[in-house]
Length: 304
Image (spheres, one colour):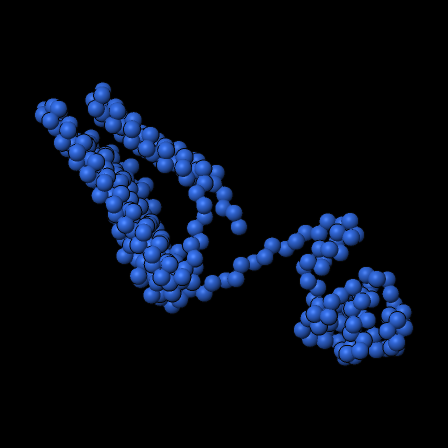
C-alpha cells in the first residue's frame, strides 16, 4: 500500500477517536505538522512511532502498513459499539479455463441448445408421427428417443465443460471423458427402456410374448445400470489418480424425490399395460412425472 492509503487510515481512525492533529502529536511526542504529513501521504510515521500510534488508534502494525483494516477487526469494533456490522461475503478466486476449454465452450453451448431443442421437439414428434400414419407405440418410442439423445448431450458435454470450468488439467478431462460417454449411454438406455415393452409385446402371442418382453426389458435395464456403475467407478478412480477433489454437493431430498417419482411413473406404466392392457393412456405417466420432477427441482437451492 502507498503512503496515501496509510494516511487515509490514520485520518479516519483519528477522527473516530475524536482527536485533533495536535492532540495526537502530543501523545506521540511529534508536532502536528508531522501528523499532517502522514495523513497527506507526504511521509510515513517513524519506526519508533508505529507501535504507540497503533495502540492509540486501535490498529495492528500490519493494518497500518497495509493502509487497510482487517474485516474481523472492524466486526469486533462494531460489536463493541453495539452497532450491527454487515460482513462482506468472501469471493471465490476465479478459475482460469485452459485454451482447450475455451475452444470447447462453443461446442458446449451448441450441444446444450440442441439438447433443449430435442427435449421440446420430442412432444411434436409424438403427434407428427401419428399424422404420418405411425402407431401410438412407435410415436411414444420416437418421443423417448429424442429425449434420450438430448440427455446424452447434456451429460457428455456438460461433464466435460464442468471439468474445464473448475480448472482441471486437460489431460484429466480427456481421461475422464470416455467414462462420461459411457455414463451418458447408460442413462439414455434407461430412458429408452420402455421401448422394449412397447415394441416387443405382441397381444396375439399372449403369455409367451409377455415373458419374452419382460426378459428383454430387464436385460436392457441391467446393461444400462452396468454402464452407469462402471462409469461412476471409472470417474472416481480417475479423480483419485489426479488428486481432483470432488466438488459435487450432497444429495438433497429433491434428488431422492425425483428418483422415486420416475420409478413410480414406470410402475404405473407397467401395471396399466400388463394388468388392464391400456398401454396408450399409460405412457402419459412419464411426461407427468417429468413435469412433477421439474416443479420439485425448482425448489432446490444451491448453498454457497
